[in-house]
Image (cartoon, rainbow, N blue to C red; front, side):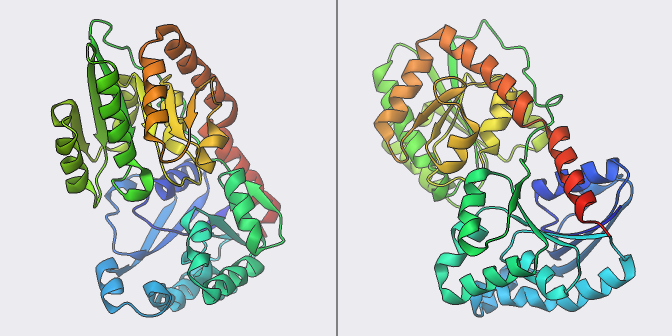
Length: 367
């Protein structure tokens, strides 16, 4: 099958879809708007990549209406030209409020749109024009895809079309438990997220500081993996709470190294203020690591509360600290949650099965 994908080239989500489809023998044309490093795609068979090489900084410096996204439409002529050259069986746009709009304007069918999160949770709340553009995009699509049921429900506010669920799972052979250092007396709490306010890492640090006061006799360590604009503020917060010596900021960790990192955690914690699909929880559970998450929609869907982890209210520092204390002090609970999490991922979020689902949708709509 010949598949034309409109998506952000640099995204690990894009790379995973493209890689799997190419490895299964499909021919893929990946079209991106922003200047991107394509090194991670080297060696992938059956793949052509084209980028308009737009600069994100330049787009936002000029800042025109629709928060700069209208400038993306400048790539429409290139999209039409490349579609004509490639002659795809399917056009698939990832992210409805930018690539989705370009795909809708391209006029090619069958046309599939995948929603990713902020395109339906944030974008339409900016005003009536944004909502009209989103509805237009969905109206032009032959079908709409969502990685979670909760995000599909949000999408339904702007379309009456059926929405297929295509979970974004994990490679269960790669995301698997590594042997632990049973001699270590350090209890490791981990977080893997971009350092942005929406992901509630400030809540986690406050909960960790409270946990340190609750269990002063325990050797506790918080590892925070990721980069982002809040790094300095979060480090200052650690200093003000007196836990800087117990918190490690690891910076960016490549996806290939995440299974070993999750396996080094005694518990993985994600206290996001909003989450459309809890992929970090899925990754941790696949490594038999119990989780503590907020009750943001995406986490409530992937985590089985009390079985694979503990779910606490958004922004509730004390409840998060209490959940961490429960897992800290109950070895058997920690072990049972880890094993149950792995089984849940095998049942619902095995990446190969997720790609099977996507292929079936393509086959249903392909020319």
